[in-house]
Length: 206
Image (cartoon, rainbow, N blue to C red):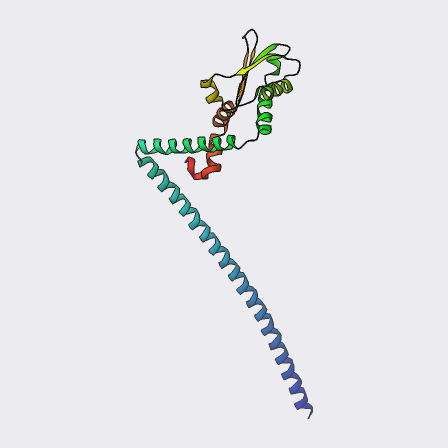
């Protein structure tokens, strides 16, 4: 009976050891599988990224080749279209401005010439502004300046100015233009690409 009992104990220990080893092998296998899966996912992501980058490079190359092959007249027509669209957008924006907004814009422009006109007597030529509004804008922007007269800007200049004032010293030695037309030129000179991108997207200027 003692021999049987010892045999049963030995068998139990062997089975327990076997189960423990099997558990360790299973855990190791699970970790290895997880590592392989993670490595596979990362490899897949890397391959997808490489394909995307290659596709973008191919598209950029094709665009450059296509644009290089386009006739000069076509490219000129495209630029002309963008410029006309930008002109219309700015014209619509100017047309939608309230009198108060126009006054603030013109006043800020006039204020930039405060040093040049300080203490002088000036005459005002206005476009798209009533005489009292033009006088008030200049007076606010140039404190201490004496305003001698307010008249309308000649039709040709007024068309270019859109709305605003031309402030001229009484001796005609100094002249300051503060108009929406001047603002348009400043925007075109310094922010043309930004405006086109805002209207048509970043690919429009390529």
